[in-house]
Length: 305
Length: 308
Ligand SMILES: Cc1ncc(C[n+]2csc(CCOP(=O)(O)OP(=O)(O)O)c2C)c(N)n1
Ligand SMILES: [Mg+2]
Image (cartoon, rainbow over all chains, first blue to last red; front, top):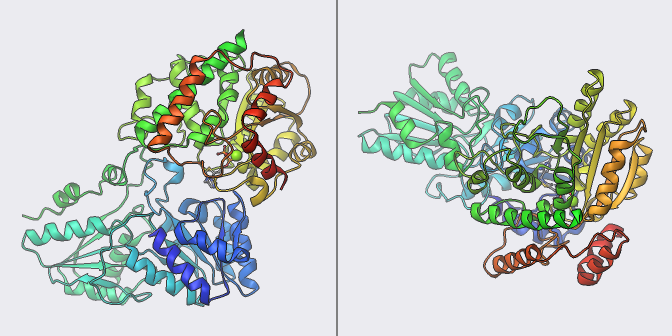
């Protein structure tokens, strides 16, 4: 995802002269390195200073530029939180805050590098859009959208490198709209971000058990496609949410809220990270599993016979 | 003589650090190598009052590794001193392990979480203030990165510590001239660093961070002084010290050696390990001369980075 972002950004940077990257002493992936060589004046490294990384982006946007702030998710969002809130969101400036390693991607680096609450925290700020692509293909579409948009600030939540493409067969990506990766009629599964891979496994498992499954990428978490979710809840007897975010403030609560607000009778199971700092290290899958996010745990909790 | 033992220890730890990282396939090796002598001087040179088998002993000095990504050195030292079994090093970064890529307070002897840069000095200042309030006799020591000093929070803590006359606080700055992706002087220049810390109300010493002689002198001065200021020791270091191709190189922050590099690195470290300490405790700077001659190009590049 990182590399796709970099490739797309580099190409866009050739035509859109207002694009700039601001990093805080993080090695820019792949083509951002090329961007740095070709457009040195539009590549800024603030050093290890995330607060001014965001503040600077606001200033640059006020001068008409389209800056992208780029570092590890915890350091684009948590460290400079109030700068994101006041300088970008309060002023509603078109700055893209790119968080690499959303959720617990950086599984061996310990809790300081886990952005377990990124979607919840970002979702609480007015004006901030949130996009969490699930694969390189969605990353491409989302990056292009960020390049040209004028709505305001965006949190673009990415994984790291090497994620498989899962959505090449699906219809076009559209900001603010759910995207069906496959369409069925018994169960709908909502997910976003790299954990879509697990959602896909769950979908296959349910299909093996004779269920007809819809798999939905809720890539735009804010503004959320409320009508789309209400329709999906109406059209299926059962809904499953799988997300790499703490239990409160993510997608799960909102799906339940929509069901309640719209009085839709649909059974909903939510699978999220635990509300806990887990001291487990190992692969990304190991850590997700420690949070109860693996096929075995989910399938046993779904109790499909 | 004592210095020679410490040098042996440093060589032994560097080897251990690399082996630990190789086993896991990950870890920040060059940032760890950068402060090996600093760590050895503190933990083996009698400058930290601690009891490895009683990590929670109330009278201990508090040590915080603010540049948490340099934790491989801390782990190697702590395992060697018996804070936890050495076998833990073999599980570094794997499921069920005590040890992750950054220090965590569930590890016996680790006093503060670090990993996000710019936290350690504030926490250390709080510990030092707390010690003063309760008239606790212990000291607080923290190791900072130089890139880390680009974080505003470091300077907030700097002002706080001098304002409150926290002379029970010593910060050692691992001044290797490099952040993660660039020379600090080329991303956002830090110099004149000594003047800055002075202006922020600290007593400042500038030393060679690989010389046990100079480290010992600074640490002794800290324990013996009556000054009412916190102490900043700016330790000039070389990132990746001990493996020639890593030394002072922008390319070596968290990269892992591969293939031939592994053999080369191991060979260099093993050789240093089997040699008697080559600096022979002269303390007259000849160590630095030998170093400069050996690594002229790298040193040149590094100093250019500092000045540019
Ligand atoms: C707040 C924060 N921002 C960014 C990072 C990512 N990061 C890890 S190490 C590093 C460079 C640190 O340089 P320095 O403090 O000089 O340490 P060195 O490795 O040179 O010893 C960066 C930017 C981080 N850990 N914390
Ligand atoms: Mg450094």
